[in-house]
Length: 137
Image 1 (spheres, rainbow, N blue to C red):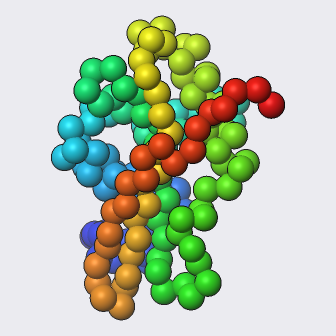
Image 2 (cartoon, rainbow, N blue to C red):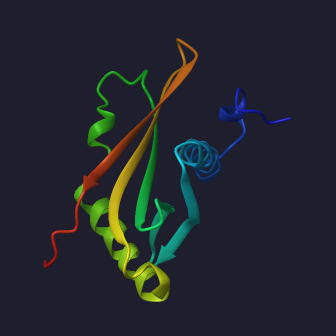
């Protein structure tokens, strides 16, 4: 049986991503976010999670998992310009096809799930307003 403890030997990259996106969803639900959509695709761009907070805030989430045993990895630099641009493009597509959210305030957040296998623990870091859509090109 595959469990969270032994998943690493059994899951491909997509499977690992799904596992951590589910952890992120549980975290967000605990923080009173309502999950609207998972894995929304638009023009080959993906938004991991879309959620509503407080009835008028629509949040587009990118979920990143990182194993902290890598010495030269900075998890806070894991979202590059290309990823941000793709997320914003997909958000435009979501809003264009979901009229009920067009008047909501929106923001782009990142959920980092940081694992330290040597210590056997994980930390979830929620970066609110991780980047913004400044408009234009």
